[in-house]
Length: 513
Ligand SMILES: *Cc1c(COP(=O)(O)O)cnc(C)c1O
Image (cartoon, rainbow, N blue to C red; front, side, top):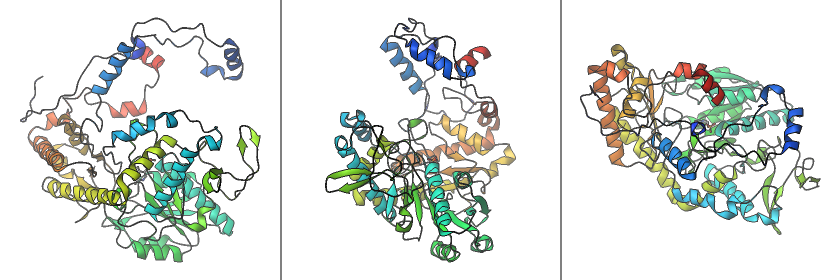
């Protein structure tokens, strides 16, 4: 490969001409065990447009072919086991492998939510105790483990806000959100039926005057992320709490990245009423393509009755599920059990993503109180160490001391025709996953960097060295950087085309050829 770069990079990603598994030649799929009765039923019931006329051509392949195929794909991928992954706000830390092992234990892998409660009491105990631990970490009084993602937790929280004010007979239809918030905040509030009012931040913090000017008897809630997505701790949070509560509204805490504060302070101490957690960011579950997530929510006592059901309760006979009176089925039989009907209802089948809950439970037990606090301290230390290094290379417009992340700006490279995206792509050539780019919107050409607690000094130094080189190359060797990456399995892709015309279907791919 010709390489015009002044530096010879070490990193080379595997590159195979790997075809799709469907394109391998094998025996045709066995069709003898097709259930024709079921097929006929489907043909009658399903809309014609989504029916296939023939079975899919899935080749029957020997195991080693399949294993090699997926191993090659894995070698062409970049994951947290390949290297540093400083994806700001979307914490991708290294998660202990022992937790994957726990998740594969037979007593976990083989259970089913429709089993009788007394046959899965251990699982119920795990959920009950995880709820208690999350309540302790956040300072909240009650926790529901049902929501499947951060955004889902936000939606659940907003549904609780709505029900609360309906019960109070108050017509409050507005939710206020600062412009530093994660995009899911306004989306969740809008989906729960609220009008969203965005307020501009001032020097990266909530502008108290702007907040006061939009607070009214129409305000249902103020949603805040603290530390915010610039990595800044809103030091006026108690003042904010006072004026929002005085206006009769509730305070919602986006706790996706609790790794900045856990064990040190908590949303309750800051006066919040509802919190969501991202177990798949802070509490040891991979996310994105890595698997299912979990976004539990916690509330103060007054709002606990609105939380989704069923929930686990501890009785003298052991751990049991508590349902609402009107919607209990146990093996198809309606049963009467205690409970309440003020709940917003369930937001997920059964109990959410149990495997994620179990991994988080094991992680918290593994870390202990001191361990979680150390993780937060280390996450903050790492972010500040890296920030000090990056400040010598790029502008970091907000914050002297940050919490778990910081946002640098590539604006000074614009005069060379280099954008944040080009820098991100070139970092891949050095074996680093790029930071989050173009978010938050208030930083021009943003690179949002979050090292997490799991990285060591050597990695952070290597990353900042690579960033330094990329900036030098951007000035001296602009065209080269614009065409990065060169060393990866897939070179620069047409992101606009991919977003506008995604080819997600094999038949479509074949037609395109
Ligand atoms: C990731 C994140 C969310 C959304 O979580 P999902 O699980 O992706 O829905 C919300 N807020 C913040 C601050 C986040 O970082």
